[in-house]
Amino acid sequence: MPEQGSLTFVLGGARSGKSRHAETLVSACPAPWAYIATAQAFDDEMRERIALHRDRRDGRWHTVETPLDLADAIGRIPGGQALLVDCLTLWLTNVMLAERNVEAACQDLANMLARPRGPWFVVSNEVGLGIVPDNRLGRAFRDAAGRLNQMIAAKADAVLFMVAGLPMKVK
Amino acid sequence: MPEQGSLTFVLGGARSGKSRHAETLVSACPAPWAYIATAQAFDDEMRERIALHRDRRDGRWHTVETPLDLADAIGRIPGGQALLVDCLTLWLTNVMLAERNVEAACQDLANMLARPRGPWFVVSNEVGLGIVPDNRLGRAFRDAAGRLNQMIAAKADAVLFMVAGLPMKVK
Amino acid sequence: MPEQGSLTFVLGGARSGKSRHAETLVSACPAPWAYIATAQAFDDEMRERIALHRDRRDGRWHTVETPLDLADAIGRIPGGQALLVDCLTLWLTNVMLAERNVEAACQDLANMLARPRGPWFVVSNEVGLGIVPDNRLGRAFRDAAGRLNQMIAAKADAVLFMVAGLPMKVK
Image (tube, rainbow over all chains, first blue to last red; front, top):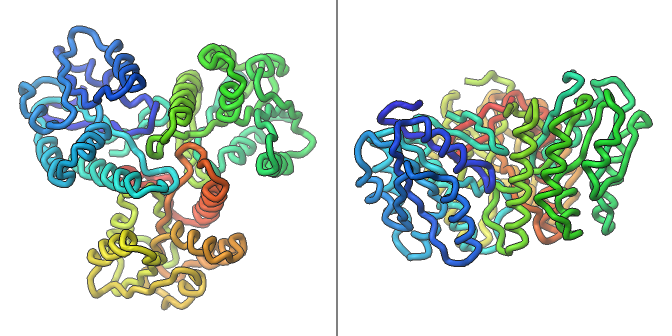
């Protein structure tokens, strides 16, 4: 079990078992557990993915849906409570689609995560290991996601890289 | 040399040296070696890739071409014989193109690999570390491949993640 | 600080902190430091990326812009001087766009890097961990990049895989 004021960053590809592994880590902390979901259900495919994740979590999870104001939502979590944020990549997508200031939003989030008030766990996607996207938006998103992951990893006490459901210790 | 009844899972990106590394591991076991190839030559590009791989293997390799019925083919390998399956990702592509039941096929395969009857080695691609594919089929394939990799990694005695031809020990 | 005649290979995805980490490693060697930049500014987006990287480097860096003749440029670096080559993937793109012989160029480069005459550092992108590119050129590039990375990693004394700004030791 991680210490009270600690940040664990769980990074991985699509279907690498990030969320499940992070949930397992949180479940080892005393309940109740806070869950901040950043996903927005734009279509049936997304609704299905969200429902799949939700079905895994029982009543000891307190879920807050927060597509945009993530730093604020984290600030409202009671001190000492275990927290899972899932995931930064969807949040970043929402911030970019809402045409907010990406740099400022990422900096706010990093500042909030730099002072964890409980055992905090944050999930994010690694998206930079394929070939260069063929459109400018894809490249901009990939750059922003990579920069954000670096900012959070620098502040984290532990960083895990998920490969086929298994964690590799990076930090 | 791995133990008689053991499963080694070799995972990596395109041209990461997965197949070559797995062949080296198998070659350290007593010959003959069984090789189950899942590739299908649809076009010249694929035919060329298959020929390149085949040219590396000498007469001690017994090759079986199995685009679809992989669990059955593995079941017919003599007990105690070293086996290389290359690779799961192409097999999954074949299963999806043939419109078979993906979930059932993956479960059958996982059940077969859970009880290795020799030193068995399975090669697969990690495909989930780029940006989100822009079409639903690409996303469905990526999800299915990630889920399959997690199932096999969970049952494996050893999991290697290949980076530029070099193995990183995951499990 | 690495030894005089040594090659360190820093591999990672887009925005994984490869360049910054390699610069930090070079900065621990005695100045001046040679910097071979392979980027070509075709458009504003690229010009901006190049300027961002350049702004990080002070006057102790001696920069040589070398989009194509990389082995020759490395051959002209004074013995004993720390060298950073950033990056192989852009160089490979240039070689392919110029329709040069890719295999010969990669072999020349690998031969040159096999005999480092100082603490040498080479940065490259891992591009093979997404789904299969939907066009033949993308697949050809991905294959060539993977093959090149394997060649260089085989000759390197140290290989680092960058994840969210943090190095994982591969070799």
